[in-house]
Structure formats: structure tokens, C-alpha cells
View 1 (cartoon, protein in one colour):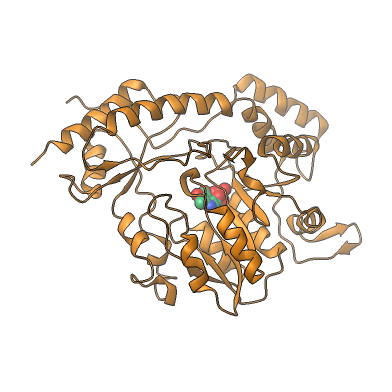
View 2: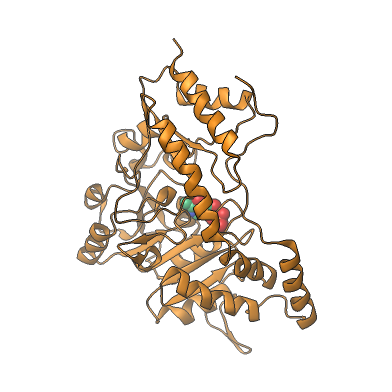
Length: 377
Ligand SMILES: Cc1ncc(COP(=O)(O)O)c(C=O)c1O
């Protein structure tokens, strides 16, 4: 089999046309208003409300600062426990810890890879104040069950939607569930502002609180009413967002084509599983994860290494899982007994390259390589 000359990475950022961006930057430079709730910023927030189908949007300079602010805005009691998933990016549990709260890991559902809603109640104690589930790879959490549990125990719910831009469940924007939802607009995300993110929420009472927290707690020129942070998105980021809003749907269509080829070819290979998006959910097409079963001739790690030899860079998302990190491994909830599904999946999961401009030849090469691996032994 022929190798691939150019490296193929897990993703490529969606970037607007340079001339259009230059026009935007020219306007910003002429206005001299480059950050602090500028014209582009406000326009971007308004447009996002429509795209994400939520009442309120607050944009941020990145998704992690947005997540930190969401947890802070909900006034969770100091030192309380937040139930979350270990099968996520470090930003999720770290945001809990940075707020002086304690992450408690809950195992995941083997089908959706999101937090197992049936296991949450067992982890609730008098110290629990919130649940922080993640729509991992854009697979939706069991929002109905989670919201019911939250209501029963009077808990706040913050959804990490970093992988689920534009996802809809039964026609509802995914950002409209729970108390607050957090999106990341990092360059690796389907929709990006290079760095950036937003909070989406329907409760109008949170607007002022989040506005102040994002800007050092400043209410007006003479009043600082909260212990805020600098989470403001600048005008150039907002311009890239406005331009990429025009492009992301076409990017999704192209990714859909790539996904079709992968699905068609790989579903014929024994011991490779392709997790299936539920019928009532649209796919953000953020990632294309596959599960390498134990009976496949090569392990996930061997496949990852083999691909590298062909200049193909897949990702072991998520390995290690958060409960393996030095700072969390000694938590009571980090034991292997508490997290059997996540610990099993972390050794089998592999994300394949997925982006609109991924050459079909490369997609075929990746599939052919997996077919070749499947015939080894
Ligand atoms: C699940 C998840 N949550 C949060 C973040 C943090 O977002 P950001 O990189 O925009 O800070 C990311 C990724 O980057 C993520 O994948």
C-alpha cells in the first residue's frame, strides 16, 4: 500500500476567505473599537441566538473561560461537589476545580459515551450542587433524565456543548437545556473564531450577572459588583465568527460526505464499531470516533502507531481519561470500580481525521489501511 505524502491531521480549521476578513478588519481599524463589546461582538451574539435557538448568548474569548464563568454565575456553595464525566477534555473537570468545587466522576453510557444518567443519583450527596455533563463528540446526553434528576434534588445543570455546535434534539437547539450551556469556538472545532466560545441560556435573570462577570465584575464606571474575570471576545474574533457563520453549514455537508464514505467502508470490517447518533438528533460532525474491539488483530494503540507511519495522525480522544490525571486519580470517584465503561472505552476509541477538505483519496486510504490491518494474523 502506498503511503500518503502530505500529513493528514485530525482536523483543519474552517477559515473565511482572506479578502472578506480584510474588509472586516479594515472596518474595525477605521472604527478604532477593537474590543469591549464592539459592533461586531454584539452582532455576532445576536446571530448566534438564532443559529443556536436560545434566548441569550454571551460570547467569550475562549470556551474554558466561558465554562469557568458559567460555574461561577450559578453561585454554587463553596467547596460543593459537581458530578461530571471522566470521558472529556481536561477543561471540563479543571473548570470545576478552578472554582474551588470538587469534581465527582460518573461512569458513561456505552452507546452514547456521555454521562450515564442512571448512575448519577447514586453519586448525589448533601454536598452535591450541580451536574456538568458533556455532549461528547456531539452525542447528546440524556437531557430529559438529567433535567428530571436536577429538579428532584434541586441541582444546577451546566452542559458542556464544546463538540455540539448547531446540534438539535427533536428540533430543539442543544444549548437550550439545563441552566447554562457552554460552546467552544476553538480552531479545532467545526465552527471557530480561532479562540473563542459562548454561554447559551434561556434565563433572562442571568444576563446581567454573566455580563458583569465577563468584564472584571464592572457594572458601570463607578461600581464593581462581582469578582469577575476578563472573558471578553475581541472584534477580530467576532468578525471571524460572523464570516464562519456563513460557511459552517457547507463545511458540515462536506464532512457528511466524508462520514458517509467512512461509514460505508468501515461498517463492513469486523470488530470495528461506529457509534450511532440517535435518530432524533442532528450530527454536529465534530469528530468521527470508531471503537476497536478486543478481537480486532491490532490494538487501538498499534493502529494509532501504524497510521503515523503513513503520515496519518489520528487521535486517542479520550485517553487518558480525566480520572487518570495525577490531580484526580486519588478521588473516591476515580476508582476503576466506579468507572468500568469509561476505563474500557479509553483503550478502544480512536478519532479519525474529519474535515470538509479532506481528500477522498485519503479517506479511502485510511479505510483501506484499516481493512489491511483487519486481515493481519
Ligand atoms: C469537551 C470540551 N470542553 C471544553 C473545551 C475548552 O474549550 P476551549 O479550547 O475553547 O477553551 C474543549 C476544547 O477545547 C472541549 O473539547
